[in-house]
Amino acid sequence: MNRDHLKIVSNRPAITHEQAAEVLFNCASLLQMAGANEYRIARYRQAALNMMRLGPVALETVLHEELWPQLGLGKRLGGKLRELVRDGAMTFYVELKAELPPAVGQLMDVEGIGPKLATRLHKELDIKSVAELADAARRGQIAKLKGFGLKRQAAYARIQVPTPPTLPTAARSIRNDDLPLAA
Image (tube, rainbow, N blue to C red; front, side, top):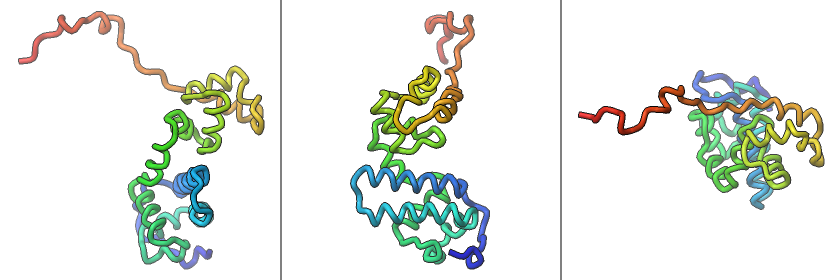
């Protein structure tokens, strides 16, 4: 595919081309895990590769249906990709993720963890959250899995999980019956 035939039409994309490609690759993996048609899976992977090859210009092209053939997109996938680029989310991807166990969906929110890896971490180590992933990495459990090494374990160990804010001691001592009644 030649970049010279594509031109930037507007500055409206809600996400980067890398983020769009990640969503498309994840869709392909989720479809494959569900036993979908191989041709359909290949179309999602090809669209992701095109997003990566063409960079930001691909985002602009996706916003205009008449330019979809230049990206090799049909109406269905083109429409889904336009939704993703325009809105920053794709309903189809959200629906695919909703079919997964909640823990797998949470793990997929970590950079570099796709559906297959998240499923493995959940099944093999019973990891249910990002905090549990970081904890397992700090205890050295990640590198014990086949295909995982010390680098990945160290990366997961560095994950900082925000702690929920706590109320000051004085605020915690106030009871509901101490509050004034609403007028």
